[in-house]
Length: 189
Image: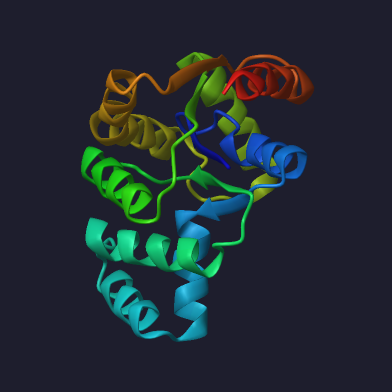
């Protein structure tokens, strides 16, 4: 079973590459945001809890996110493997995911980290903002997202580096070239 986490700063192309990875390797895709929205839409107990937190301007706690991820894993136990996007975002979440993997006898195959210089990321995101309608694709929001990533998410890379499962991926080039770089790494996992 192949279980992969895709990492990278905002604008690195995680969403785009995730589509290709899940298709090529027949993996079940887990996006934290997508799973949270699905729980809210379903009106589940945990979804209502998350909705209340978000409605009051808060963020779902690590424990709530972990509970939702665990529920997703259990509901997809027949999967060929999982592709995690947007989780874990903190070292605490990485530790929680480790415990979930132990609980369900799963192994983390690898963590793919898309490496892209910041100037290229800014250029990509500003270009995307012209057509996406995403309110957070403006220069101030972009800079804030980089600060958040550096402070909260980059330490997760160190966590996985220490476990020898981190694989940096050259994330500059065409979508196809980057996907080829990713496949070269996945084939060695």
